[in-house]
Image 1 (cartoon, rainbow, N blue to C red):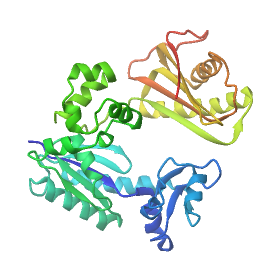
Image 2: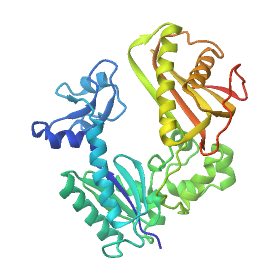
Image 3: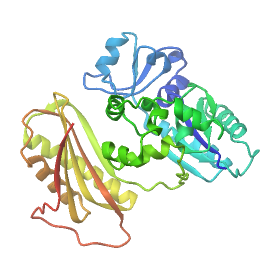
Image 4: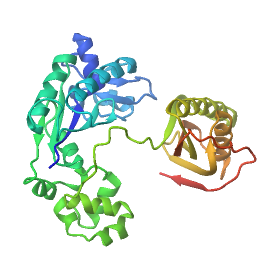
Amino acid sequence: MRRILHVDMDAFYASIEQRDDPSLRGRPVVVGGSSRRGVVAAASYEARKFGIHSAMPSAEAARRCPELIFCRARFDVYRAVSRQIREIFHRYTDLVEPLSLDEAYLDVTEPKQGPPSGTLLARAIKAEIQDTTGLTASAGVAGSKFIAKVASGWEKPNGLTVITPDEAPGFIARLPVEEFHGIGPVTARKMNKLGIDTGADLREWSKEALVQHFGKRGRYFHRLAHNNDTRPVRPHRERKSVGAERTFSDDLTTRTAMSDELRRLADKVSDRMEKAGVWGRTVTLKLRTNQFETTTRQSTRPRPVRTAETLHSIALRLLDTPAPPERPLRLLGITVGSLLRNETPARQLVLPFDDHHLSNTRT
């Protein structure tokens, strides 16, 4: 019987700012730019009372809370604190799967220290995090990653929720589908229209019917509904993509300006691929207009893309296919997927552009 923890720091970036500046404690704080094009990266619990959340435009956050305090992000500090937290995790188990700077799965079925109890180990880890960093974390304890992740968010901040194996089926049955990890707002609305509101409703559907309505994800939903999540905690998660994007203070209105920004992004993505030791075959260009319409254009190459120059050339071709954007752009992004480790050199694809596979998606 596995013992899985999901540990999630509470309002991580904002809490660090409040820790380091006592004048911010108890006040509504967000980390992010305060300009009209800024976006909230994190919000303190005092700010969340106003409905402010991450990814919200800063202008909207300021409208909801005129007393809101904006803090510039300090990612070097956040990464340093994250390393402290990871060191604590590894004192208890080597089976640590980071999801981001502020959350991770831990398999403590056979801990390196402490009692063989997920509950007691979660309490010990939470206490050590607070003693070491001055920050609080919430934790979920269960026999699967799915339930542990959901449970960690139930009693935030500084919460601890334990779901025993006997409780798991009932927990899933009562869970609204909106709370299922992997079911986003669009999928949840589609499920609701089909009469699927809870895990119990989802359990009534056959795997075949779910696949018919939701594609291959239907198999995953079926497993979750039947408490069949056997995914292991993977200490070294395989990277699926490498990318970079940028939101601009002033809209891009000319192809020359777009090309210049794509070159900078291509340089950044190429550098990140090199550091990660990967190449990729699928290039995705992300475009967001000043009307917040988002489009992705994608090409899969016969051979992996290895240089910034080639990546820039592919991104430019995607920019022009099927046609350049008609409206000004507020965001550009490049992502490379279908990654391969670069231990085995491959011949770099050269122009002319070869449309091995090209797709265009609008959201």
